[in-house]
Amino acid sequence: MRLNAYLARAGVASRRGADALIKAGRVTVNGAAGELNTFVGASDDVRVDGRVIGVQRLRHVLLNKPRGMVTT
Image 1 (cartoon, rainbow, N blue to C red):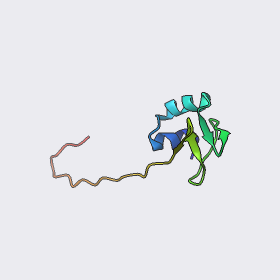
Image 2: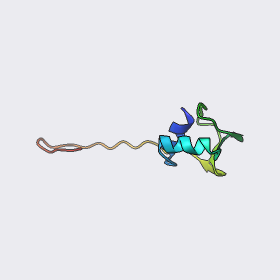
Image 3: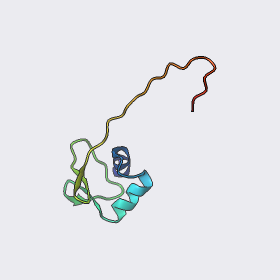
């Protein structure tokens, strides 16, 4: 997964905001400065301003929608 998508899924920032954090040098991957084209995995140590970042698990919500009910 690309580093900016990893940070976005972790809730740190949006993907564009994550790009700005990476360019500012605030993100490290396994102790080295992160770059925009860096790919990370689950075993990599990703930090923003020294704080360890982990990906949040996805949540799925099921809805039994009655006929005629509008959802967005």
